[in-house]
Length: 214
Ligand SMILES: C[S@@+](CC[C@H](N)C(=O)[O-])C[C@H]1O[C@@H](n2cnc3c(N)ncnc32)[C@H](O)[C@@H]1O
Image 1 (cartoon, protein in one colour):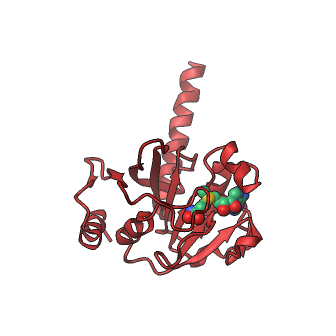
Image 2 (cartoon, rainbow, N blue to C red; image 1 turned 120 degrees about the vertical axis):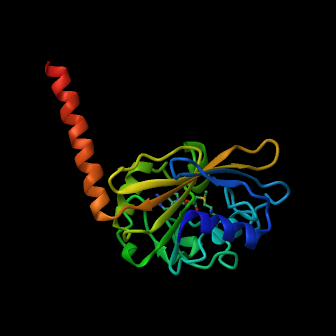
């Protein structure tokens, strides 16, 4: 599905004004102002604001196997899918550490919604240590080609450019006194492109090394 089609489906299903655009480089940019639609239905600390899942779902009508990573008390009525959390009390489909995902058959999933703790202080609320974002992204490399990762955070996680392409960057505003957040949407790259990106990176590194020696 092309991004233009995703954006049109989003406008049709949500009825929200046009706020996502495909930029000249093919990357999607935009801003979501959540307005009064910011409350967390479950009241779970750090839970998705109401309306978030509906918006994401409208962008991905083609996805059949979604996985909620750092799932907390995600509203599965708003966005059905399997769940992963480190806390067994939340009864996720998989109790696992997002940094390894050893128990999760990632090859089955075509969409991952990730909502990690944003800071050490946030992690304290869940009685967990702060996650290393790059290690989570490394684990997610086991996703099938074409799978998307929707990452909600205050930081852009480090990722391998030959494994993921950053397809969209969406700013999210809630009401006053709430932190701004960013939604980064990655796509698991196909193998041929991955190889091209990897060889271009190797060529750049070799050129840099050559310049240093000269
Ligand atoms: C921001 S909350 C997610 C809230 C969720 N989006 C919702 O709507 O309820 C972060 C979640 O990450 C979980 N978590 C923290 N460290 C984790 C780790 N290393 N692996 C998996 N889950 C982790 C916490 O238990 C917490 O439920």
